[in-house]
Image (cartoon, rainbow, N blue to C red; front, side, top):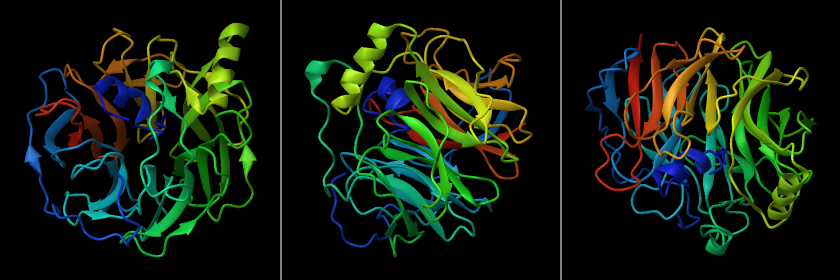
Amino acid sequence: MTSTSRRSVAAAAFAASMVAACSSQPASPAASASALRRAIASDSGEAHLTSLVQLTDGGENAEAYFSADGKYITFQSTRDGRSCDQQYVMRADGSQLTKVSQGGKTTCGWFLPGSKRLFFGATHHADSACPPKPDPSAGYVWGIDPYDIYTTDIDGKNMKRLTNYGVYTAEGVLSPDGKRIVFTSLKDGDLDIYTMNVDGSDVKRLTTTPGYDGGPWWSPDGTKIVYRAWHYDNPQELKAYQDLLAKRMIRPNRMELFVMNADGSDQRQITKLGGANFGPSWTPDGQHIIFSSNHKNPRSRNFDLYTVALDGGDLQQITTNPEFDGFPMFSPDGKKLIFASNRGATKQGETNLFIAEWK
């Protein structure tokens, strides 16, 4: 979901935020650990992006997030021929690449205070191999894999299990003060948003509306949370969603952006664009949301980055490349933007990480 597979560009847009078979041996530096840093020309319409640099080369790389000091990046990848995502850490210049996960499938990494440990969703407790893919006879659906959240050192050592629900629990993001984690879970029978202390205690449920709520992200001051959701007015559509969810699958529909207070109060919809709007995070001033959308052509695989004000106004298009652009995050100092894109791909479905100066 996040919550977001990128086996095609469309799948990247929907499933990468939910997010290969490998051994359960301690993580070790990847073979291709040198920095790539390939300069790429921005499209002519991308006025906010300068000095664009490609950080990865090959496979499906996405959900890249900075450490609080801006020195490190964690991301998920199928690099080196892996059949499902593993979690990696590298320096912000693309060097010192290290795999930190231990098999299964992973998603949504985030650094803990001090940048010496991180957490991410993983399925290796259920099986060290990749989870089975959904039955193709069900059509285009997402598999709701049994992630739980784990913590580990940035070299992949000293892994500990933070949650133990045995159902989809992932999409974690650390609060700005370093005390709470917001995440998505199926623990109470629907896909909802929760918060907990960094040690896994004091779990609180924030959303209760039937339907999918996920992809949460704290505001810079920690007072609000932006997220993506789709809810159902039609009882038949809701029942179809619930029946499929019972089989640990969901069928992606429209997604819009919502915001709420950090305690779950004052939940309100920001966008009413149509199509799929996902991967929201905040601009450094906390006044706008940056996200990915295909609302101009909902049947298209062309997702671009946009910013929007909290009242739904001041919509601005940031990227104009005719490929997929998604999962944006600003650096802690607000000077750079990292995102995933299919631009310049040499193989179908290849997704790489790019970083640009923001102006």
